[in-house]
Length: 250
Ligand code: COA
Picture 1 (spheres, rainbow, N blue to C red):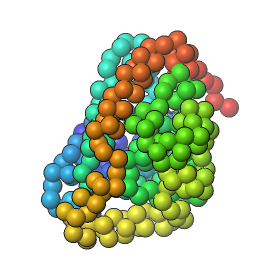
Picture 2: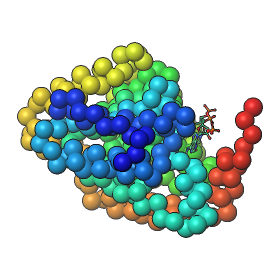
Picture 3: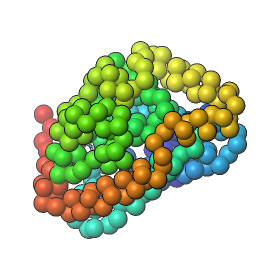
């Protein structure tokens, strides 16, 4: 279990908090594993009826830990915890909510495609710099992104790496509502409790009916992962990762 993921149960709501503020919530393999475990266990527990993702003030997540990506690029170690987490996310049975404040980069953005409701503060910023890193979209975002925001917006966002501010993210359908910072967590927890108070079986079926069928999403996650793993070994990716890891800060 990772210290950087805190799990809390508030009544029928499970809160999964990414808590690595010193690295802007960059996600390590241990963090992915802890989040997968929480979702699987929460889904299996009849007392839990909704999952909520939170980050820390100013950083929902800066995406995958680039040091881990570099380790993969140089050693070829499989990043299996990442793929497992993405598949667990796509297969989640209970409603997923997120409260985003500040940076949501890479998987910090794409996990929201799997959420049923994302609330964000006005200073939130969503960005997926996959191609600039020599990589490709992940987490099923190449399928869910165009379906949610249309091809052209998804292309600008997921292939060109154009960022979305909070208002743009709401307009694109990635965010449900904007909430002031001091209201964020209370609002998300209140809505999660409202969901949890509804008939759970009907809620699960309704959610399943509303979401894209799981099978093509999981298939896409696996296809993206094959490209991603191959790209991570490329010179384009190595150069981009090295540039980040050796950058001089002003
Ligand atoms: N992986 C590993 N470390 C990361 C990280 C990541 N994805 N994002 C941030 N960090 C680390 C920084 O290296 C820095 O560590 P240090 O203090 O030991 O030097 C610390 O977190 C704080 O980040 P910093 O860059 O100083 O903060 P900032 O506010 O100037 O910029 C970001 C924040 C997130 C914009 C910038 O760090 C960034 O671009 N990170 C990479 C994001 C990314 O490409 N993610 C992968 C997407 S697929």
